[in-house]
Amino acid sequence: MEPIINPWVFYFTSAADTLIVFAAIFGFAAAVIAIIAASMSLYALVEWGAEDKDYIARKAFAKKAAWVAVPLLVLAILVPGERTITKMIVAQNVTYERMDAAVDVVSEVYNDIIGILEPESGEEVSK
Image (cartoon, rainbow, N blue to C red; front, side):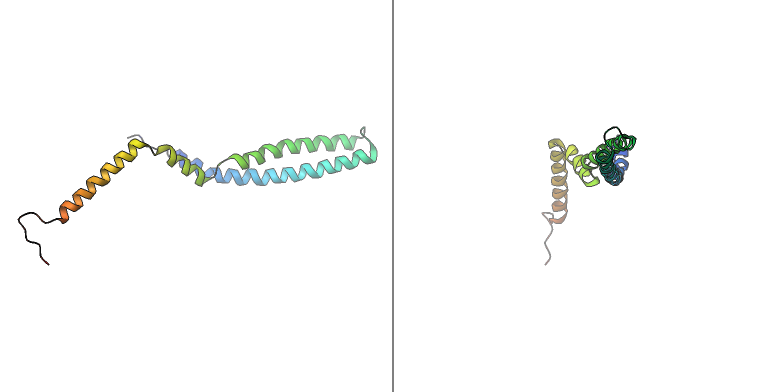
């Protein structure tokens, strides 16, 4: 039988939360480092000018840190969490045909239970 939901989805669903935390922590750290490096670069620019080696090196480092921080923070924001992925899977798999089939099954079970509980026509109901 073919499963309705691929079992790997459950693994990746739980891994999504780990990815979000990883991206948020390292993205935030890289952003702080980029801000500090940019501040140091600005200080070097003011003190020694645009031709200073320290200014050029700090500016390049700040850019690299920003290039790391931005994608990680965007990833942390855009990746859905485990609960959201679960809701999306449920929404994808609920169809009108499946709902009709579920209603039919529930109706059959209900009728079977009522049929068992109702006395047969020849039996007397005891009180």
